[in-house]
Image (tube, rainbow over all chains, first blue to last red; front, side, top):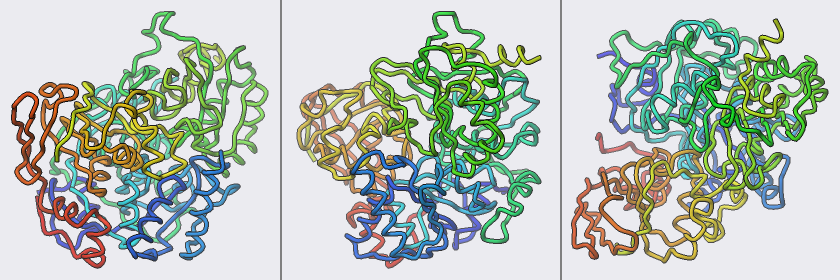
Length: 428
Length: 170
């Protein structure tokens, strides 16, 4: 019987031989991602259980990202705890403030993520790394502690859903719209306990950045992981960047078994916004009434979903020469320190500044209501992030709409939910 | 285990709702418990009593991987969550803390707010003392039960000495 891509990688990291969905297996872990919110509890647990030490310090990558620069005294203590643990355990891959970044943008950018690996991280969006043909999944602090200590973790082999992407993205429609469409179709638990395996010609035209936006939001459909086969573009991205040498490219077998198979014809897609308070509430902007095109208080362009250089280029191309609408706060958060510099060098930061945006250092920040753009009572935000749950970005009565960077940029200029194609037409 | 029902007749109660991220600058159970369910049910903290059970619909605990969600509920005195289904990271986090995620289809339509439940984990049986009804659920797999019996994953790991493999192939 053939195997899916996820099954191939898990079998490759399991000592017991053949596997099938539903099997409970002990899996060797190639790389562990740590940040300052979920790692300090893991450190404390290891101490309490007398399980000191890290199985292999070179397989651990650490960056503080959620509440950096430290938002308060307690956050400062968390980062200090993380830093002291890094030093004590001889972990070299530590990205301090100034070289830091949002973990799921930073690790791929710095070449830590390689095809065929198994990666776990103390963060639900660890599934992002699946864009590289990597098995990657988010875990809590206890699992993190176990993985750090032993280099292994138990998993139930997931069934896979095959998602075929066909056609070419129309102007104004981006990979964010693809993943919002998928989640709208299958629901926020439509892939619960399953792997989302992406195929199709559309992928060939999507950059690694655009692919990562899709894999990033797998958890928003409840998935254990999302995965795409590594191809020439993956190799080109890794060229000169990959840390750790060789990698293994796996392919799904032709006769692999899938729990479900679905196709998204991307030619038919339009720009979407996901209404509060679930990522599955996507609707075409063109279909909204003028009342539904709600006025916004804030636009947020950043996060592990859409804070990469390509996202900033798209947003800047729409904002160039325009002004953010009166009464709107537009916040730009490049996802890593390197991306910040690149955006600076390409003149994107100047465009954002001239349009009236605030530009932040990389941080998860307001995506999860931490700091750097928290919403007040009843405020409305269009955001390029991944979750619009009740209270996610601030006050429980605040309302978050999820959208692509283009839609967010157009919305910032108009002051209400806006179809980005209105600005693309202007350019022509 | 015996306790009262705190009923939520909705699906997708996510970890941002169980413990908002603005409180993730600590990981002390008692400190987190003060803000449990705050954004969707501000009265929860005053209403909940030690030993209570949360009952909800589908996909309980979806969203962020924050184990703080389990700790906040444990800190508030909640003994277990009963739901139609659980999000997978929350489910793992619960087991890893010896906190019981009990899956029973349709449970939220069968119990009422404040009903007194008695749960027999070994038999996989919930007795609703208030309504005099019985609901069965499949017992945990032997591996999960072994983790719970050991007192959580790290204690299990300590006993296994760096993980001697899993006996259960379910």
